[in-house]
Image (cartoon, rainbow, N blue to C red):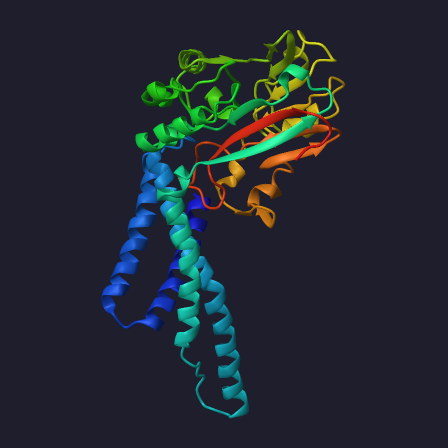
Length: 409
């Protein structure tokens, strides 16, 4: 209840300041009614979705859009607040000076300046339009990101070997079959040797994937398709009627992965063979710092391979890499992770800037990182969760080419 009260206070303050700017710029009353109408609809839908139809921590499509519209509306008003508060401070100082120095009988504050409100509204339109764009276009703005990694001890037969990685499908969030069909076609167009999926097929329940089975069955890779589980795949964010129901959900998801054609690695390993040589593919269950599930067992997963093997590790949460993988005596040449989504928001201009709030939580949050002669790629995610969109951090299909040699790029 306290959280809802604090939310209501914050929402009212932001809305009032937004209205102050609009009222300064225009005298059209229909604009006022429109602004407050939007405010009531946005907050009313949010309360309805999260307080009245709540399913615990389950994020339905309705909840996601309610959160997205609220975020866009509040971001709009939040940008306005510093301008108007700053102006209020100046107006107050002028009024106080007038009262004390000129000895006026009444305290008078100058009117708001139209220019300040126009500037505030203009800047506020940037996050508003960006967040709305992200909800309706950005979330399906799929990008193929290609990397070439060099390894001196790569088996000769695997020189030029191509890996496509996808992660964080989050099928429970999808609302456009045509866009997902396009993305699957884009994956197949890469013609990689192997396809690796690094977890979070669903948001909450295995049934979320059922409408998309036919689409994802079309995924192709010459040497196979392999997967691991992410934190959302275990059903930990649902209030199940019984432990048996939760366990059955996980079994259903495993069956779905098999139906799609994925070889699900549950703390297991496989060998990929080519021209009499091989590399080891290792897959651990989810292991994440903080409150995330720690079902991953690296020692168990690698029990059937050798220390001298060239190794690719699939581990959903990149925090596992620094906490457990990097200093493991087996030396995992390449780790593939996801999980962060790049927070679905940020600014990336190749060669210039790469920033997202995700960096405050994860040291490795998007792209290739190298330490102790080992690499990790953190995929920005195929789908989306929570905020139903992406701004600046676009959905990613990763293609990694392995090359024999000492130079990496």
